[in-house]
Every structure is written in C-alpha cells, then in structure tokens.
Length: 104
Image (cartoon, rainbow, N blue to C red; front, top):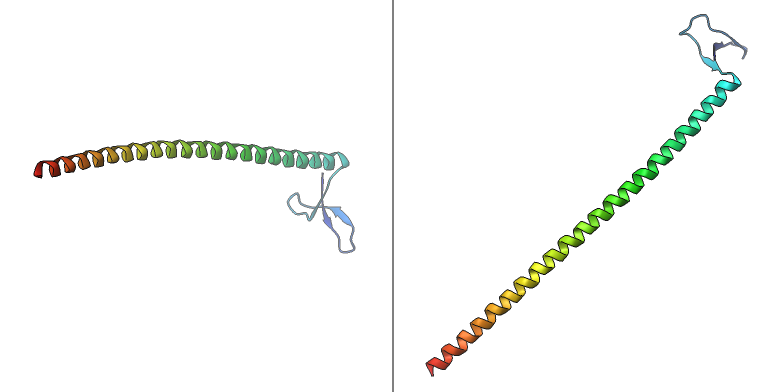
C-alpha cells in the first residue's frame, strides 16, 4: 500500500508525511485481499441474520406454545368454575323446592 497525494494536474506523488495523504494505492494482492475480507464479512452478516431469524422463530414458537398452555389451563379453570356454579344453583333450586314443599 502506498500513501500518495493527488497533484493539481491529476497525477499522484508520494506523500511527504506519513499522516498527510489524500489517496491510497493498493497492490493487486492487497486489493484482492480487501475484496475477500469484504465478501467474508458479507457472508458472516448473512449467517448472523439467518441465525437471528431462526432464534426469533424459535422464541416466537415457544411463546405461542406457552400462551396455548396458559389458555388451556384457564379454560379448564373456567369449566370447573361453571360446573361448581351449576352444582350450587342445582342445590339452591332443590333447597327452594324443599322449602316450598314444607310451606304447603
């Protein structure tokens, strides 16, 4: 890699100071290495995105299963409560009928 400054007429000249340059000229091998690193980085990003998507689907499915489990338990409790209420109503009806029979 060579650090250079672009001249007024469009040419390039070596930089006088290591920290004072406007352009960088890479060798072919350096350029190919940069392209390979870029491609690897893009592949890494793609892999991470796929992994993230997979984990997100897993957590969503897990949450949906938990919701379904909670709904099932709630429905069972509601059914038990309805059955208990029906039993109490039935007992109350019987008690009312017995009371009416005793009052006659």
